[in-house]
Length: 409
Image 1 (spheres, rainbow, N blue to C red):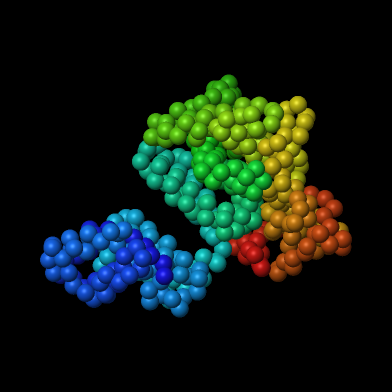
Image 2: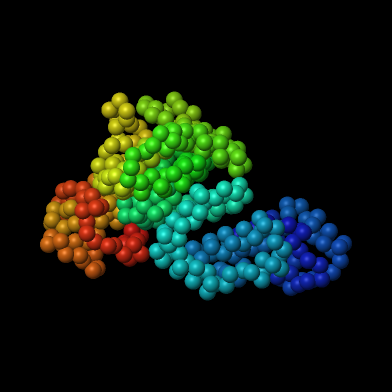
């Protein structure tokens, strides 16, 4: 039995109950189909101590557990929205529909669509729609980080190195994903802090989105005005977020401080400055991956090594956490293995230097249609070098490669 509370206001007079109505102990108050005829009858039901409940397991007990969870999630959402019981009954997903939804969730996620949505978010000048877009992307991207973190890293690292059309959006999402993985898997920060960190990383450059996109395609060096905008963008981003109605001081503080070069351990810092340092190191890494008109992208392993040491050439705690979380060779990065084949990393391994890879070029440099996977922890397939994206002359099918990032893929 899975009891979900409902409000008495959701019960309609003179209409058959679409669910059994229960008390907090699961004891039946009124059967499905029972009609409450009068206000007095409704008041009598409402007077039950402990509240009113419906059983989410009812009529769905043959469903697999994952499908059952999907049903309960939907049901609880409608309860929070204070939908009436009749509406809930009419809009319940059927078992077949739930199973179809589960099947759809196992398909590769549309990262190109999310890239477009993030681009719209960071160019949005309207406070209400900005907050709505941000909430949506927060939900969707956070779900992908949990469901398939290797797929999230693969898509964003590959897109960062392969195109510049929506640089600012891709960069922000990659930084956010890296920070969440480091905070959650390595630093063990509380989940409420991880949530704020995610939003701060995603919005850190909101005041210079258009400039970031333009600079990624600009051949000439930055002029004086552009340098000033880059220098001041953290403070202006915090101010813009405040104007959009964001009032979380930790979020705003992390955005405000995310460009400060502040070496040293994370422990003595407050939450905002801990987040800011982690964002700063991930920001540095992600920026080196992206191609510019004035320079090619850096190989991910080289970019990661650069953020491992701080400004004093000492091991940086935040940088080390990022490497431990995403690996020296991250999903989406190209490597050469001992067989002299070129492969792309598809899943992180048991340690930072032994990921699972998929071979995309054989030893003669010929593309492979159906990439076989290799475990680089095996001596015969060990990684011998990192390979820059620009040096791999092959066009990957992103949707097909994402299947290989999934567990069992």
